[in-house]
Amino acid sequence: MVELKNVIKRRKNNFELNIPDLKIKSNRIYALLGKNGAGKSTTIKIMLGIEKKDSGEVKLDGENLIDNRWKIGYVPDEPMLIEKLTGREQLEYIKYIYGMEGKNKESSVKDLDKETTEYISMFEFKDKIDTRIEEYSKGMKQKISIMSAMIHNPNIMILDEPFTGLDPVSIINMKEWMKKFVSKNNNSIVFSSHDLDVVNDICTDAIFLKEGKIIAMEEYDSDRTFTDMFKEYLI
Image 1 (cartoon, one colour):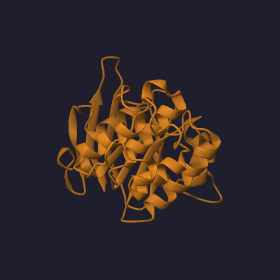
Image 2: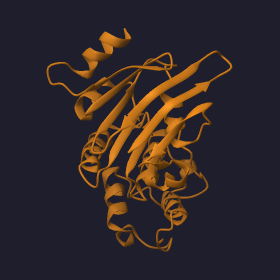
Image 3: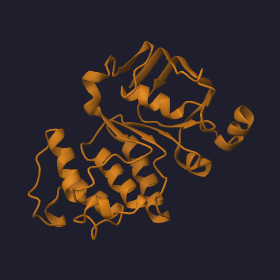
């Protein structure tokens, strides 16, 4: 689905991201793993076209990424929300941006479309959906950020530390949703994480980054966990 070819990104602090070839395939959950400063967030931003690369190309389904960004759902490491809006208004605004039919802001949770209602239930958000985002806790902002990325039914989800701030129930529900998401319509997920237990639980593949370079790509192996691989490659 997503392909990075000969991508280079240089920074003033002498850091260089160098990815000769990376292919994100359908029906897979990829973890981006590495120590702080390894290039995980930079890789994600290059994939999305948020950060300009110095050279190389990024394609989505064989076409220019910029022309197909509507196929992507993105969750940044820090939620980017319109905090004067309520949770409901935030979701309706995102649907409007993507040309989806919005509902009247006076409608109840029951009047929202089926998938949105399921997300609200998944994150136990029913009692907070009409509260202004500026009043939300960090964890609640993370939840509405994830819902905002899901709402337009993307084909690929790219998430930067998505489990940060989530309560245990939401983590369990989120992991189950991620598994279901990649099982239909040739979808895929890429996410960065420092939680190796989560990675071992749900990921099919792991991409190991060190000092801006991919040093290994591994598939799930029941006899050799991603934790074992992390120790082997990065410690």
